[in-house]
Amino acid sequence: MTSAEQAAQSYESIRLDNQLCFPLYACAKEVIRRYRKPLEALNLTYTQYVVMMALWEYGGMTERELGRKVCLDSGTLAPLLKRLDRLGYIQRVRPDHDERTLFLSLTEEGEALKERALAVPRAMQGCLPLEPDELMQLKRLLDKALHGMEEDV
Image (cartoon, rainbow, N blue to C red; front, side, top):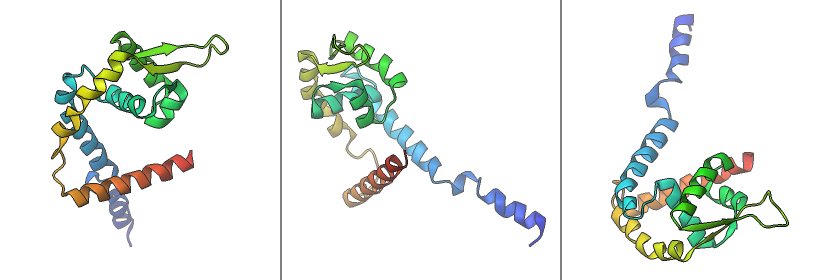
């Protein structure tokens, strides 16, 4: 193989069409964009919605625990949690015995928002043009990939 052929073959590895990461990125970006409209009624961004879903499901927890559950670091979570607090959806409390820990819990208003949030999954049905079995397969594969990447950390 000539050096020109080797170079051409090497360049194939950086073609956009040959990347798995690009369609994952573009699809995720588009799905999140489609969440914008149904989430406007809740006054939430997509990331805030993810945080609220975790709190609705698991109840109160520390910022660190929440970050692990929703795959967000403290630098991303801190301003988001402040805004949710200002909206009256959550309460942030630092225990007297440990100033480094931030405990999060839902307020009555945040708990009540859960009922209104039931409209969001209904609004998102059909967002991805896949059959139900394909959607389940995609979810299983993404969960498997994510779980495998978590083990590397």
